[in-house]
Image (cartoon, rainbow, N blue to C red; front, side):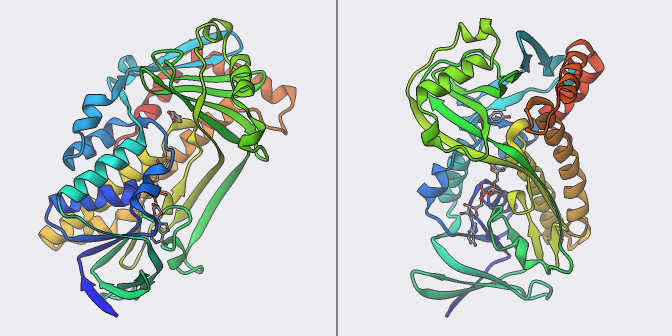
Length: 392
Ligand code: APR
Ligand code: PHB
């Protein structure tokens, strides 16, 4: 078995692992990323398209913001609609902070290029990754690659391997607490090379269910429909998708909709999920390895970025000052923000979707809350503060 040593072994080459590795590099801390898929496979995953200012700042700190600033679009508000009613949440007025509309897949691509341009060490197609001695001062990771057994000795392990990774399960069952809510529907997403229906996103709670009108650029639109959890993509030919979307947005918006052939169509389930603690010994969980949010508030990657911020600064403090305060308080600090984001994502999902168990009373409650949000500046300020991103 060949063995190597690094300071931080990162499990997972998605955006969390890549961003952490790039930030550590910028501060002189060595890391190795172990990724079970190929680079192309990781980049094939469809991701959301909204980046909080906090994550933009972190990408700037990592030296990975040039293309985002060139090709991304700053949005100073978003639209909400119900029935034929549409109103705007003004981020600039309530927070002074925009969000950046830029594909998170492009963020991942930019991070890969940055790591490759700085000789980042990434092992692809790793198999059977096992975290060893995570409660000792000498943890190590074993794995195979192309049939060769390998070992990495390290100071710390960052579990950035997503919801289906091995890191979370390396925390003892007797210690680990998991919280979960499964939503009884999915999101059917469609990508089309058509101009967006509006210059800002539209979240719609119609009598037929939820719809979202989003975008990637002036000729690439991203649309979502709430669908049954049992639906399959084959149940939704393009014509059916467009007809249903038209029925879920106000008529004046539907009249502007430009349709075209889908270049991608997929269905994603919705869940809220949190693991506690996010640290065990020398193992630190980051991103989807520790938590999942329904996509309603576009908080998945943005919450992962906040985790990376806390962990990167804690490791920086340790290596530069031999001060453990940052890493010792990582789980507490990360979870404090995680739970606030979970609440917002849950609240927005409950407000905007139809639930099979809804009675006419619940529907009336949704409309009453939407009308209050439409008419109340304080309610709009609270929504804007959560949507643009809570402070780190
Ligand atoms: N060994 C090595 N790599 C693994 C293993 C394993 N055992 N298990 C999973 N991985 C890899 C996956 O192949 C994936 O590339 O870990 C990576 C985890 O990446 P993501 O699932 O994208 O998680 P994360 O980086 O935390 O980003 C999460 O990005 O776009 C958003 O909304 C999305 O919330 C999500 C966020
Ligand atoms: C997207 O553009 O994919 C997107 C935007 C906002 C969301 C979810 C997804 O809340």
